Amino acid sequence: MTGALPTAHPPASSLDTAEATAIARAFLPERSWGNRSTYYYVRAKLGSDPLYNGVLQALPDDHLPLLDLGCGLGLLGHVARLRGRMQPYLGVDLDAGKIDRGARAVRRAELHALDLRHLDIQQPLPRHSGHVAVLDVLHYLDAHAQASLLQAAAARVAPGGTLVLRSPLDTGDGRDRATRLTDRLGWLSGWMRTRPRHYPTAGALQRLLDKAGLVAEAPRALHGRTPFNSWLLVARRPPVAR
Image 1 (cartoon, rainbow, N blue to C red):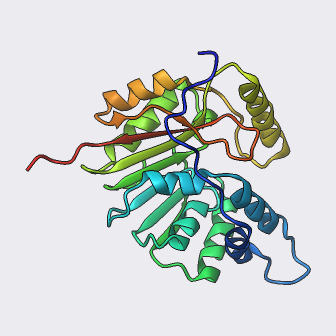
Image 2 (image 1 turned 180 degrees about the horizontal axis):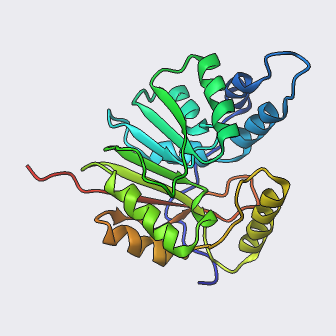
């Protein structure tokens, strides 16, 4: 696929400075002379990337639990609580260091029903029935593994539930090239535990989700104030007919 994809909805906004700083404080080191790199990363990420507000706009505000696959530091859970979303949240990620730092921040912020676990998302996933998020991790898997993960994720979407996916897409434009370069640098620097492997097309993702029994919407841009080629795709499982 080449060229720009249509944007069906206006993009969501990032958090304002006060909100981003309030969440980032939970990631400060215990001692004043400790390493503050995670604090600064979280503050910058939340203040520039519309990801988390965009995801929460797409998810119904209901009682269904949320499974976040490839959760990193668990920032979606923090923003959900900031927005008054109180449903149980489980985040899993391969990077044990991020899970440890995220878990400490959860305890410091005293967030309830918010759990982070060390888990490779290519291994069997936790039992779950509710909403599912797969954010900025899909392109670190090859095409076959992407299909397997989306099938497993879709199987955990409850009737009436939603799967929210953000991923860079194969669009062949300047954002695409900038994203590929940045992703590779993130792997070489050690921030990401694995290298990027496959950038899917929008059509391929929609076909996978439709085959899994979900109704996928057209993807929409979710770049924000970043140079990255980020697209949001929302798919829903129809509710059970009464």
